[in-house]
Image (tube, rainbow, N blue to C red; front, side, top):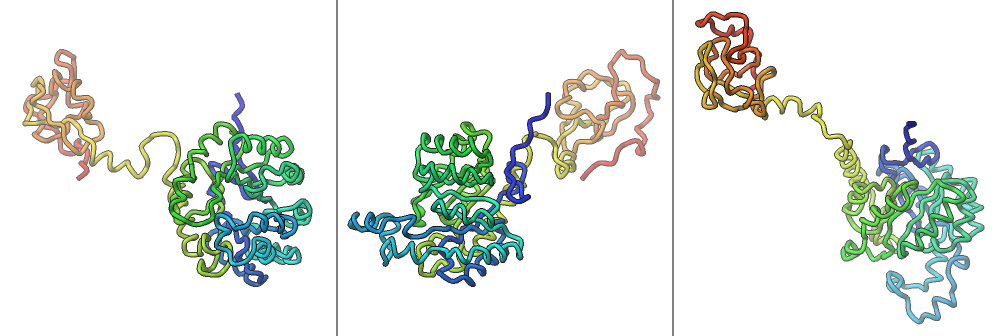
Length: 385
């Protein structure tokens, strides 16, 4: 029967899957603060901190939000309630000018990090196509099926965040995308951007188990906005192999995304802890590891002579001690029942390991050994102390 090919997502030659290192996406988003040079600086910092990709968000205020719609609500909700400007103005200030795109791509290529973005209108999808090896779909757009179909038609890897959605909505989005383009990473997400530790109880990493069962042909990921590394390490343990977190040079900066973003030192620690976890997860086969081989000798027990045993004596249980270290070729602790009732073929000093060639069944013919002959010290394997 042919072996099933290993599931992996190829982003410009970088493979993402269970057998590969976790792919880290630094979401710079609005943290460029309207400055192209700062945007490039953040890309460089992300690379140095261990990110595999620098991600932006390409939107235009009038193509993503309705000024009238938000003003008619009467107040700004959730994390937007802390914004000092109107929702429309914040989006306008935070947008990435399309004229930056080529330079951001060129700078990313120079330093060896992937550049891609989350486009928030149809025209942005087309504009980005020559510059990006993959697309991100934000949680808010996963029910905009028209956009999903258009992104899927580009036949590039897609990272789909699934915050603030139901299983039915996720199933519909996955079906729409994979019918056109199977290259999908499905990311568990919670879209509360307050950075509060209270959010941990709403993360629901176990949803990744559901995704694994329902969507076995897609790669799993996490798009996260919580502080620290707990959610990332938990997600990787559950099978996520792509992680997206917001990235900034300083959380104290003024702007909509800085407060819940990660700084370079925290990002680097996250990557390092994840690499340790990946090594620790290891393989699914239980076996004696190479670094345990010596501990078997010093920690396991073997059968040893509890007293000096003369040649020809029949061993009883009280003649046997079960002690560390185990000696290669000796009866092990699990074989003590095989030792009781056997006859010594030679003199065995107290404390010596009961080697299998020292003993024989009581009535089994064997090569005669003189009764007073002692075990030659040269024949005794060196013990491990």
